[in-house]
Image 1: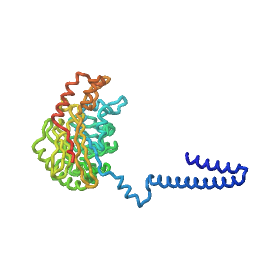
Image 2 (image 1 turned 120 degrees about the vertical axis):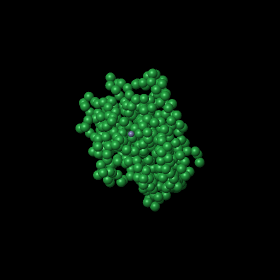
Image 3 (image 1 turned 135 degrees about the horizontal axis):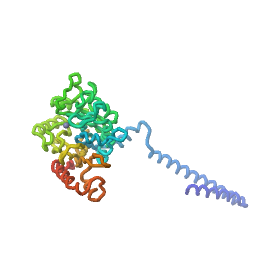
Image 4 (image 1 turned 90 degrees about the horizontal axis):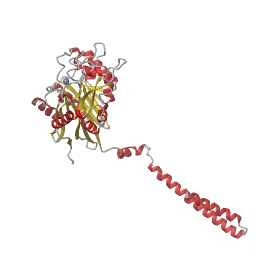
Length: 422
Ligand SMILES: [Zn+2]
């Protein structure tokens, strides 16, 4: 704006000089104003040139020679990623019925809605899904031979889960075809799977996720199939918990990833502690390349611990409990959303376990419009809502159960882990 006035001013001088009667004075004035105009134009031009070149350096540089140095300056020195995980998803008869809609289709939108935000805190999130989806022909059933409507896959995806663990003792409840169809349904819902495989090729490829430059690999195995046979021609289908195979798989996967997560379906059902063998095996797996062991199957929560191996913090949780089910009793309805953070330093290529924390959850059954419904609720948050009078399905009469769940979960799992500052 100031420059504009200067130019205007010199033009004004020039015009004034033109109107002078005395030619001598006019000549002097005219010369003076022309010189002024030229000087001002010069200043104007140099200011503009300076601004042009200066502002240009602030624009993104697209010259190929400068590209690598600019990218190096922008690339982060380290990256923190979050993995979330939940325990067993069972589908009992009552849960299946709860999803039956008036038009005969199924939907389970209530199941995970209250914990969606917790699950979604993970860059990548996993859950153990302990039922086949073999289609409607053989009927939908709960325990002991499960078969669930396909719709639950969409609800698992909508809850924020990315990965479904399919290696568990109910995987073959509807035979090989049921197990393979389950994978198709999960994949169609946009979910990854690990632990069972639709063919030989799939069974030889590792699940590796690249999360902002941090590579995470998942392996999953189950102690068994409830005695249901895996035909020899479909041996690729199921990952049995075979120590030799696990060690061989880890050896192959380890160099390809920054973080190796080993998911094990194991342990003694309804028992609050892992066995000595499980503890020993965990140390062996952590020493042999696993960074994390996520356990499931006992349907109750078992302890977690951080174990230092060759100066590195490694993590095991022996059982994450039931995430959703219609089993009876406080312990069998206790679960967690586990949250594990890792930091990768790109200069050294090293990755560290940063924090481990968890949110206790409760598998809650309730009635709505005379129909039994199910949902997973975060325990502390629900206690707060009851006390504030904002919880729609639970009252003060439910406080003792929720408080007992909170207490037992905290005593089983103990303190959260935070990597000490260097
Ligand atoms: Zn199981």
